[in-house]
Amino acid sequence: MNAPFTLTREHVRPVDLRQPDEVARIEGFVAERGGSVFHRPAWLLAVEKGTGQCAHGLVAEKGGLLTGWLPLTEVHSPVFGRMLASSGFAVEGGVLAANDVTAVNLCAAVQEYAERLSCPTVELRGGFAAEGWTVREDSHCGFVAPLQDDDEAQLAWIPRKQRAEVRKGLKNNLRVTKGKDSVDREAHYEVYSESVRNLGTPVFPNSLFDAVLDSLDGEILTVWNGMTPVASVLSLFHDGAVMPYWGGGTWEARELRANDRMYYELMLRARRLGCDRFDFGRSKTGSGAWSFKKNWGFEPEPLSYASWTASGHELRDADPTSSRHQSRIALWKRLPLTLTNRLGPLIARGLG
Image (tube, one colour):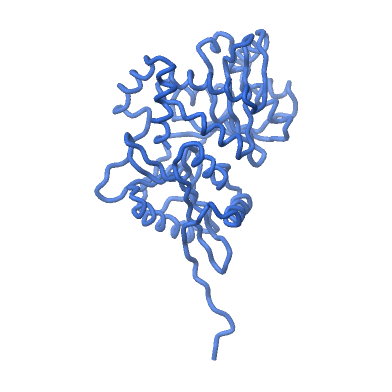
């Protein structure tokens, strides 16, 4: 006699993100589970288009329903080696799952999948980590705070010393633009590339910024001194939050308090667009950026990052604060901007 029903087992499989129906199904799961913008297939595909690093992912299914999702970017670099990142070029990611059993299954599956792709390292930037993975909770912090009800309340929310810097920026004869047309994109790349060069970091390819702006809900806010852009930020909007993701300022911006003006203006802009939270992103614990965000009144929340390295391989090291990279960073800071803008994208594609 046949049983009236059959028990279904959960299984994990790779997905083909070139299939629109598959992408739509996963996008729905991400929204349902409250995932970040970096969990979205749209992010993975934008990264692939902008950097050439392949978009992958694993889904868990049971009875025809999605029970878990692990977004992945296959990152390869002649300098830093190969890895699977969840998610690539992102500060968040990791497993989205209905329960811990599913999360464990996805962690086990990604180890096998990484070896098939000749990637000896897997990085999960947030979320669940299975037993046997290396977990760090002391390397980075996130900074999120609610937006206030009006402009004056937003200014009053900022601690006194930082508020004084914002007021100086407001008094200066600066203008602010918002958008994502060619003028906005050119101004942003001009400022951002100089800013990261001054920090000793290779700039990402412009094609990455274009792909993200074309595929996701994003906008550029730029502060100008006359006809010269001095501070600019590319922000992402997701699930009621604004995240200033790629931003920076020139040396001139410091004296003008243009960065302070920029972030305050972004807070006002985000509220008018319907956002209720300001996500200041992550910063290395104890770094200058970490202190800067604390000065703005944001409380640091430690982030949990997990990694797995295949037997016989060394842990991947692309940390800019690592001692092994300090001489390279010092050299990069001294190079002409025209040279770093030409060489930087070739290197930065492999940072992931």
